[in-house]
Length: 530
Ligand code: C2O
Ligand code: CU
Ligand code: CU
Image (tube, rainbow, N blue to C red; front, side, top):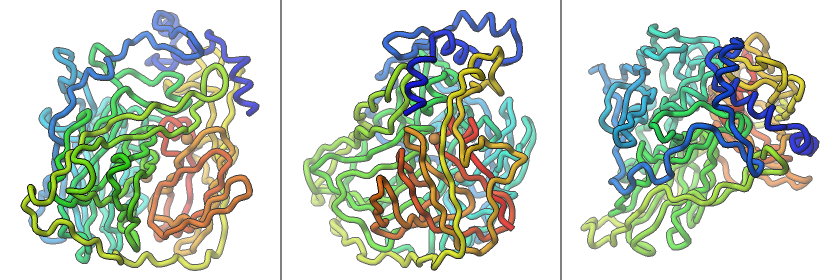
């Protein structure tokens, strides 16, 4: 609470404008530019900061189009078991607002169809080779979020691909890796910007013995977009750096509030690819659904009769949604979730109001003419083996500090980011030259992740899937009710989440908060696996 009091008293409008100016300046060390930047100083009113750029209204993007089908990355290989693909990251213009084209950064060059990167649809055992061409004005990498790829193929910030350069990422998908993953850039201090300009795409890894293979599958890739009224994508302001960026639009497969027709029971894969937005998903009280999978694939048993499910930034889920049950019309909604965003003046910001993500129409089974409806979900989906007794323990502590002196220092920003606003892991911000933790290959470890800040942070570990063991909050210990493979888990303020994890390959792995602004600000560490 010390920090919140501090902000109340000390964060004057002058400091706030210093921040915003530095954030938007191309060359933060350049005094002239700083002076010019004064013209787009934000103003303070009612404890909220308003940027000079006016935003497009929240209904500026058309809604109600049928849900777009994700484009698929073409396999350039005809050899069985080999997937060869090319991902070009480049500026591409789309006309989201009439006559005001927006330059996105996206994978691929199509202006048709969604901005979302193409779906990489592969199988366990496949050898995957992706040629990455960087046509961005800055260095980038591709990170294979959640996949057990070798450390030197995982797009670490220490392995940048320069503007204009090409590199090949190569890995083989082990058996047991079937699940729902995604890819996105991971360059040093530029991840948030590259993702909010459009770079991210889905991956599905399939197994030969998937008990749900026959179910019709639907993909919902949820991302966040902020558009100025002139069609541009504004830079982050100070509030974005503090709380993580949330735009005025949430897109499903690249479009606002699409229409989904459910005519038969379906398997949904849902990605939360938003930079910072938490999605408390529901279809309304009349439509219960089952959860059958998490980040790293199927659960042991379906979790039936759910009315809501929280997906933190970076997380994925697999659901079974039933046709012909409940009212014919429903709204896929992100309900209110208070992640305790910090305010400029005092206390927390109120949580975002609930928001409609998609309109869903359920057709009765007869109208669909599908005799298989409703299908039974197998009661046993697969075995998720326990990792066994951990042989060693590790501690990860999230903390935060706001340093007034650093905030006020002239030119106090690095790489266009505000200085003095620190989100830390184990009392330190990320330093590419430092190893934060060391693990031995093949050793099962118990990690405790403790959140000593005042807001939620989603913890993410590269290179493996882990299992949540229990969660402790206010001396109450809640064992995780079911076993599941995850690579991202939310940690609430004051909470400690314990996970069992093991790394199989030697090399450096990142772990960090998946609010991308926090990651860029240094809420990240390097795990060295020996
Ligand atoms: Cu999805 Cu280190 O990231
Ligand atoms: Cu990752
Ligand atoms: Cu965070």
